[in-house]
Image 1 (cartoon, rainbow, N blue to C red):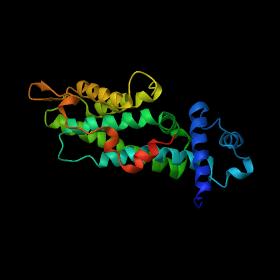
Image 2 (cartoon, rainbow, N blue to C red; image 1 turned 180 degrees about the horizontal axis):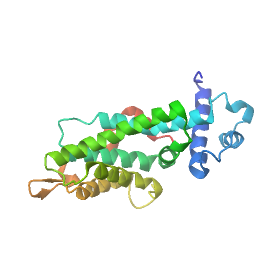
Image 3 (cartoon, rainbow, N blue to C red; image 1 turned 90 degrees about the horizontal axis):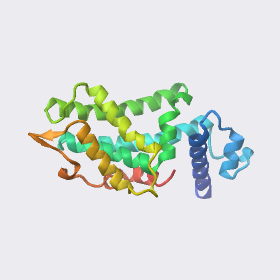
Image 4 (cartoon, rainbow, N blue to C red; image 1 turned 120 degrees about the vertical axis):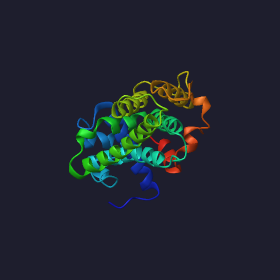
Length: 226
């Protein structure tokens, strides 16, 4: 489907935002096209000018959350120690889930709604992203900076820990998103018992830029929507 431009592109974004709200609130399967059109301020007949199918719309939402995270993981400098890269992974993940809770909730919970090529594509993206976490944890365990008995369990546990903010964080609460990110980085380093010599490593020990400064421009732009 050719992408509309100008006012059409704004309407397309409105449809996508409406889908995020409905899918997050009541689930993909329970959302009808007529309901989606109403939420977006369109008629059912005009809806298909701005989307190919409901599943294509879901895939677009999933790409918009997963691809920026994968890009930011690939962009981490290899010469930084594993504790630095782990903190960076945690902060980018928490930042994205705290800034785009509805889109991330949809992305994290609606995999079962995908079929065939779409499922293969999104699973491949998620697997590549999770591999980056495992690689950092494995490196830290191998060089003695992390205390880990099972790399797979540790990396999966850390990832789920960072994902959990989608269920409870509110930007109008007492914690800013930046503070939430740094707090989770500190907790993750403690959970994995990151250390150099006999000294535990804290987030404040790391020369780590704020997560919004590290995310690619495309990721920041996406974070501002939905």
